[in-house]
Length: 114
Length: 114
Image (cartoon, rainbow over all chains, first blue to last red; front, top):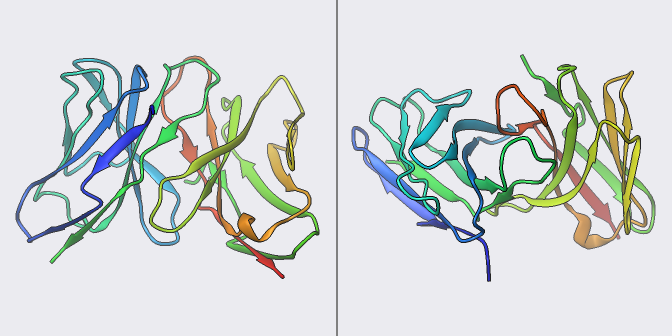
């Protein structure tokens, strides 16, 4: 079955540590995205990538980093520079930019800083 | 500055009746609109979309209406069922050009009363 897999589902991090969230898709989609959801808030775009080895900052990129070495994978690193990292993180993919298509989402990773 | 607004944080509707969820946008560049449904601790699932060349799109119990002059769209669910209880997000994007990614509203929590 095609889809997007995020792991782990729950993640705990100590303050000052970097942590990497995994996102893998087997939908053969070109574009991939990372969003963050906070209570009572919509989804806010962190980073996106249209193609392998290229990515762009979204609205709230500070304190985050990404890589896109393979089409299927778009990992997100939450660095110690992110001041409020506790949130629900969602990865999504889409066929490609400029097409009237929906984005498909993974099941999310709940990150908690302890 | 919110470009996509869902002004009702919650909505309670009786089972079997019509649910109407509203969404306003400010960016006139948006030309593709989507509705997503989300359960707690899960990723959003796509419901229905509409492009700016249409004013209505229907899929089973779900209908989306777009009023471009008012920069307003709405999602109608008829008849409402208990499984429809969830948070509904309105999202918008630009089909060609502009920044990529979907811009989301803050969501409306729909509660279907038996």
